[in-house]
Length: 358
Image (tube, rainbow, N blue to C red; front, side):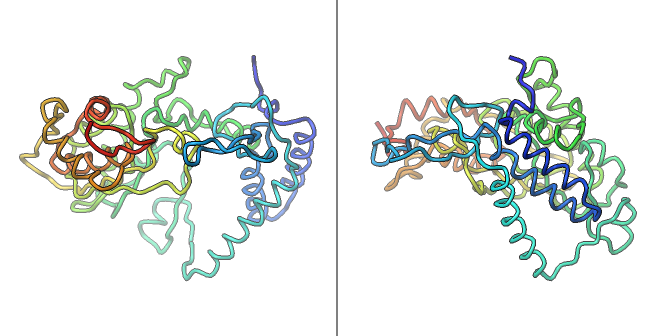
């Protein structure tokens, strides 16, 4: 079935959205027009046919709870139209987002911080401008910055094949009339037509890391937010960084502000990302990343897990975080697939929690 963007909306909601969009684009003030475009795009998902009907809630004390009536669910990220869905009033969706965004704007206005947006790199480097926004691929943007000119870099690239971001942005790009550079996206995609395989992903990621090394001042830091359940993704990532003039300084985790359906229901779903902080430094005898064998290190790893879960159950992602931090600080990685096998073989689970040895 050749589904178009307009098929994601009922005819009535599509008409209402079109009327609203036309009126927003007719606003003369550029800032006000941009504000209402933001409200509009924020409401699109909930105004679509992708909002599913909730008939059952999640398990509580091992039992699935039926709801007394059909409830409005959220739309699941991705383009999927459920057999039974709600048609939510466009004006209600828009008003709801408007109120939330306006509330956030009021909080921002109370902050003692003035944003002065520049238009060129020179504005940021040689004047009191404090913001410069680009809408371009990172590997291209970084090339305009001089060597050793940046104090700190923080980046959150696509984590392998976890989310095909530009593909998922199709609905918004269609309404906004945007045409992103799909061929330059750093991502692994299941779409055969895109040729976004592992090789392409790491080649482009390598270009970005090389540029970060070039523009970052010596002795300064860059933080990378990342997580993946794929063995080779982790190994290749650290192999690239380890060949550059960076040393790992700190490893932390942070939880997502909101979980997805998969994260909330899948036993092994990731619920945090790692924050890996590196310092630019020239190390003559840098230690190479060692990929250890879970089986060969089984005794050590089992003892670590036993100590970690003692007295309380732990989720799979918590055990992954604990062991990853422990070994990364020693320049060591392990295959997650082997860890999952060890958990299944050596430990018992109560629901989604690992509680002790078998």
